[in-house]
Structures are given as C-alpha cells and as structure tokens.
Image (cartoon, rainbow, N blue to C red; front, side, top):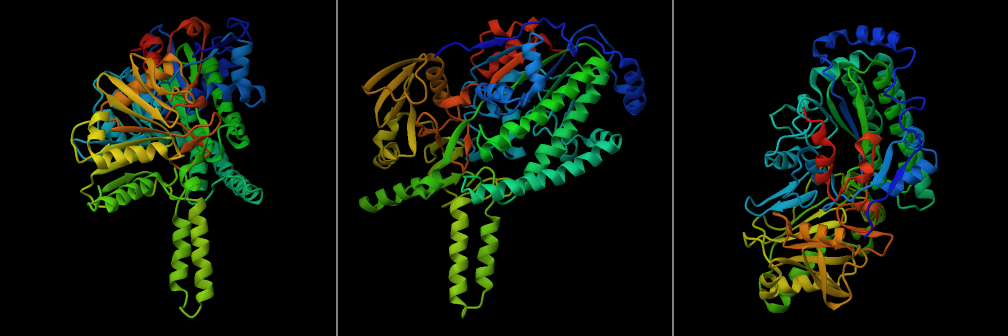
Length: 589
C-alpha cells in the first residue's frame, strides 16, 4: 500500500482572507463582540503569546470524497485554503476499527486500546458496550488513563471530552456531569439568548430541512432508489444538520473571542447523510457546502476578534465505503443467521443449541415504529374484515423488509435467553462474535476443538455475506475467506492455502497490520467478521448505504488539512494515535 498522498497550494499565508491577518473592520467588530459577550468577560483568557489550535472534524468524510466535493464546488473555503493559502491536504491511515470512538480516543489521549468496534462485548462483565448510549461511551472514557489533549480547552459534539474545561454535546466526560451540563448547560442557554436572529434563522432552516427530507424521500421512492427515510430520521436530520451545527458554531465563535487555547469540534452531518444516502450521494456532498460556510465563519472570527492567534486544522476521523444491507440482501439479520446455524446443528446432533444474544441496530438510521403502527391497526381491524387485515399484515411485512428501528429508541436488541452462550455485535460492516460461555478469549484451536463452535465458524465462512474471518492464533492472527487462508505476524502476511484472503480489502502492510491489531485487541471478538466486499460495495450488518468500521475501500483513508508550518506532508500518520503525537502534543496547555 502506498504512502499517504499530499496536495499543497502555492502561497504561504499571504493570500486575501488569511485568518492570520486582521481585516480593516476588526476594530468595530471587536467593540461589537465586547458588548455582545460582556456577560462572558470574566472567561476571557490572557494572551500568553502561544498559538492556539482549532481542530474541526468532518465525521466520516474520506479523502477521496473531499477531493470530489472540492472539484464539484461544494467546499470553496477549503479549496481556497489549499490552493491559495498553502495549506497541506493529505490523506492518512486511520487504523482499525475505522470508527469514531477508536479514532477520537487516539487523537485526544494517544491511547485507544480495547476499543475493537462501535459495539462490542465485555466477557468479564457479560455486558454489551454500544457507543450509541452515554453509558457505553462512558465505559470507554473511564478506562482511559492518559491525560487528554483538550485540557483547558473546549469539546463540542464529540464522543469523548479530552479533559476539556468546557463541553457541549459531548457524551462522556472524566467528571460526572448531568445531561444538561453535557449539552452545554447555562452557557449554551445564554448563547442562544444572545443570538435571537440566528435562532429565528434556525427555525426557518429547520422547516426547510424537513421539506427537503420529505422531497428527497418521495423522489427516492418514485425512482426506487435505496433511500431509507422512515422512523425518526427526519427529526435526526433536522437536529443534526440545523440545530447542532448552528449551536456548535456559535460556541466556537465565543471561544475564539475569549482566546480559549484549544478547541475541538465535530461536524457530524456528513456522516448521518452518507450512512443514509451513500458517501458519494448528492445529499451528503451538497450538505458539505453548509459545513464549509461554518468553517468560513470561524475563520472570520479568528481574523477579526480572536483572543489569540490560532492555527486551524481540519480533518476526518475515518472514511466511508458504499454498502448494501445484509438483512435486505439475505432476508435476515446476522444474528438470525447465527441462531439458525446453531439450532440446525443442534437438531442434527440431538443436542441443546448454544444460546444467542444479539446486539445490533436493525438499521443504524431508522425505526420499526411505522411497521408497529400498521400492525396495531391490523390487530384492531374487525375479524370479519379478513381481506383488510391480510393487506395490512402484508404492508407491515413490506415496510419491515425495507426499514428498521431507529437505534436511539432501542439502542440494543437482545434475543434468546439472558444466560447466553454466544454474543454477536454489529458495527456497520464489522461484526464481532463471542463465545460467552467461556470467560477467556478463544483462539482458533479452541474454537475448532468444540464441534458446535467449529460448525458455526465453517457455516459463517461459507456465507456469501461474509468476506473475511479473523481469529487469534498464538502470537499471530489467522485470516480466512472462501478463497484462501493466511496468518499475519508483525504486519507480514503468510498465505497458507489458496489465495491471499486480504486481497479484496488491501494487501499492503498498513492494512495487514491494522487487521492484526484489531483481532488481537482486548475485548475483540473470538471471531472478527468483515462484510463481503466486491471492490466497490461492502456488506453492512446494519441497514446502511454507506458503512465504516472494517477495511475495504475509502473507510480507512480520511483526510487532514493544516497550515504549512506543521509540515503535515512529512509526518508519518498510520493510526489515530499519530495525530495526537504529530499535532495535539504541540498545543497542550
């Protein structure tokens, strides 16, 4: 695999609009904001002469998709920074899993072990950890011992706080905070009161966003595109794309005025839309124009009223790959497949099957609430109206074949007995399978010694929705697909039989080492499962049009933009931990 590519512009910071030079009207603006933010004057930091850092994360935007968005004219501010002001634009290798918890732990703390997926299982505690819930993210936060790089600074719309002094829309913090405090508390409430015009504009934008969602859903249905717009997604889209984006921009503007030394904020809108419509979709790329406008607004604040000089870095935590739903393609969830295999094998042997517990979202974006409403109508329909009842039941089943249940309502789904023997967790195109009846991590030889476990392994290997199985194998990792098997040791692949099973996902050293690391992590599955990948589209175990978590395609290659002084084009960045070393440690307070 080749080293990350770089693209640099021509100038060295002397172009018009450079945030490091004050504009002509900055004195009037200084007076205006001094009056507007008078209530926060005690929070203003003294200028100690050190440059501050603002890092803006565009969640899940791959390097290739950013380049496409620039060429289509959706990111004029970013384009100007790169082509006119000399900012470096490069891709980097995010490591595995290609997921936000792993990436942000590495970026903020330089420590991201024992985070094998967005959802995983703790064998010792017999507990599923899912980062869609505050408790799951707090589980990760509580096990990080390293100091955070955001100490003395601010964290907005992040999973982890990085030890930030000020947080808003941040899920897990070192100190116990109420939900109100994690949403920004009275500070955010005061900011809202100070921006009545902006709040009114938010209301109008919310209505327009809702209408846009309804229009795109209707067009998608008429054209039979694979868009999912049921359940709570319209609400989530309005909340994310309008309310949260505006509030985080307001909060960062205040911080710039106050001279907060380090600020990290995540723009999550692209991730939501790309999961929903696809990473290269018009909807996802077009929305980048609004994020780009917020970046331009922050740069103007830096230029005119910044409480100190700032360096601006823009990055993504991972990319995304086009995907198709396992459930839609094969008519059942992965958990149902595992259950069916276990029960079928037990029936042949005349034994009691291993009991399964599944934790997943039928989809990551949508809800079964519509199907439940239709089912309720069918149940109250008089029995003499059998034709109507049958039609309603068929309609309910059709809805369920296309839509699922929004995970914010049901963050996990558990099946079979609570005293489970097998656990399977889904994280987009990555799944982890645990034999929970054994409290210790199992290696391939342990699995093959048990006939029931061995049969499940073989059946999953042959399933067309599964592309790769990885297991521990002594000091190495064993990887296998229907085309061949190999071992990985020290990032080097040795093919044992057939073809290299990593071929569809990437055979370079970085990918091999990342898969080895993922399969060796504490709390990783006894069997690590990648969705089948054909070179363009990967199978997602959640119902998604765009997926990330495993390897294959652009999901391993996010982007990084920074001023030329940071010399990012020369840095070796092969995991999120390297971002901490290369950038964050320079600005620690």
